[in-house]
Image 1 (cartoon, chains in turn cyan, blue):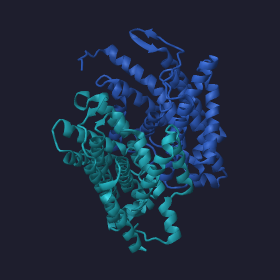
Image 2 (tube, one colour; image 1 turned 120 degrees about the vertical axis):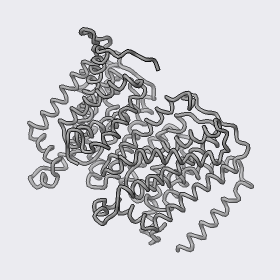
Image 3 (cartoon, rainbow over the protein chains, first blue to last red; image 1 turned 45 degrees about the horizontal axis):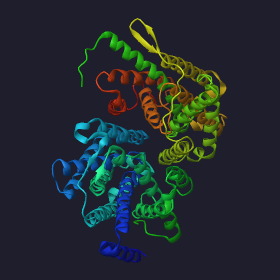
Image 4 (tube, rainbow over the protein chains, first blue to last red; image 1 turned 135 degrees about the horizontal axis):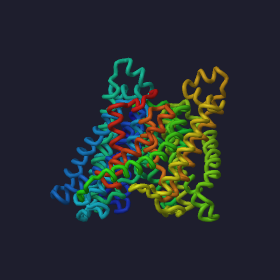
Length: 306
Length: 292
């Protein structure tokens, strides 16, 4: 079974590697979108799927990464790739700043702090106008070829997924899962739960920072409302939940299926889109709490580490 | 930023405005606190319910010219029913489940309600122009809508606390929040109490929304910030400490008012946020103490 899945994955990756050679621009940019969502949903999974601590403000890391990348390119003249990679530094710093006080506590404190975080970061970015351009945003030089962005975004998506696999098969992963299942019991067994949660949170903040930088370069223009929308957080959450939280392939499946569905169906009903997401979250929580992977695992006895 | 000479009058004015805003925070937070106390569920749809209350007042005023304060008689019972139905249909299934489920569920409900409101009423900013101007007492101005909303909020908070302490249902609610299992052994129908409590919480959110609508703009996404501020008030007052929520509300208003001396009002959310993080660092059990 495991070997079959591996072959399938290799075939898909091989196809994706040569895709930019022949596919149309539309297909390539759509695939970049999917890569982006895989990376974002996978990152959300690292903290919320594994430990059960819900991050309602993950887009803040994406947004702060976008601004870092855009400012490094426009003001410091960096190349786009290192500028995007540098986006993970402020994202991790912000995660440390919020995670340290809030993750020491059990209960909903973290979730609420994250709910407010996005508004706060957006207000600050708009306020420091001289530095960030405020509401009028930042324009980046237009990109000549999207293939490099395609490979970079794909690389981040793969990195997140491999890291998730690495975690789920490690003692660290078991510690995180034990926090999700019963935090007090985990503590009693000698796990430093505050520290483990903080590590998971830092890891989950790194990648959205990088993805944000790539997004800024790829879209050539950013402003506070375009890189800090609540909808981005909602989308990460629903993709991860729908695919199956706490699994390796869950966020990947969720990102691919919902992106395709979104492109084919919901693009025509742009206004009901968010309402559908709200209803979908309610539906998944009540009817399918373990997502598609949960259903597949029950039916086909898949190994735990997928 | 312009350097302003800080005078005693100015300080007093900010304290007054801060406290007037705080009364409203206390009212809204009491609803959140009740639901959390009884069911251990943080109702993230609390803000969306507040928004429904605000629209109720807006439409009754815009269509029939109904006095916004009288519209409380419609918005509170209506939101009570909405809350009870939400509890019965969805929330009761996650009361015993891990926190993750109830947070995500109420978050989903909140998005759904806010976006249906946007489809129905568009995302235009609307306002209820009912009362304007201020009373002047000495050198301090009391904005009329704020002063009256403050009094109404205070009255409603008092009524709710009286209800919790003096009536049989109120006592059952407090008993359930103290110990769910023991309350059940004592013959309290915990399921029914859950429903009533959720209805009450929603009703208080609706009342808050009606009062907010005469001071600030009404729009579908107005609620989110109130969830955050209400939670902060609950943390300040101590979780499960109902009178504590009242003082927490006043305190938050006061801090926001005074902080506006140093920062623009644009950053009032940032102030509330920094305040929350500091309180969590220093006194996670709340300034007034409470159960964790």
